[in-house]
Length: 202
Image (cartoon, rainbow, N blue to C red; front, side):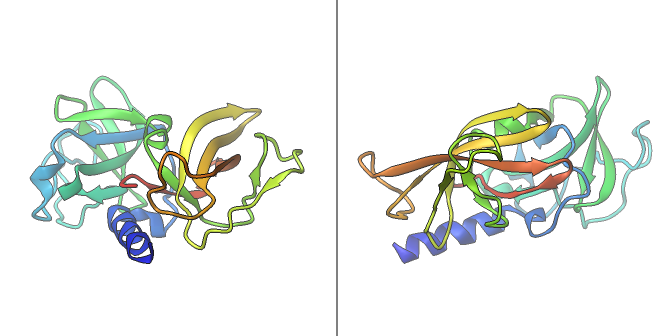
């Protein structure tokens, strides 16, 4: 079991270039490269610009999206704004860039990304509650050393962002269908601050 946990953690960490830091903004979702495998050689798209007119190309090789694991099909920039012409994106956690809104990129919301992911809390003070409200005093305990909690629902209410999660009580990385599971709710963001690490390969 420990080997599987270490493998999952190493994959998750290698996926997430930016998740060791807080991004400057969370934006509205992600601009996703349609063919991320083009960048397995550590190259990057040639159509990234510093201006919204898409005339000034960014001249650097040090460009990383938030989710960066092109050999596993992941090359996702946080998208701050989009229109019919361009996606305004976040590069390297804090720099602003622009890419054309064309057939090379698709847009995915945070909700779409989260619903296909597992998460771990950045801070365990972000308590797992029985219902999506801080007034709920019933706390769900996850005693696993390494968290990998499957997202099963997402809601926003009264300006608060909650996800419903599920995890195996035996802490198995890949629990079978009969494994005992617990469910609960945690906040995944507060304003522009991300409260979870997102594991897209779990």
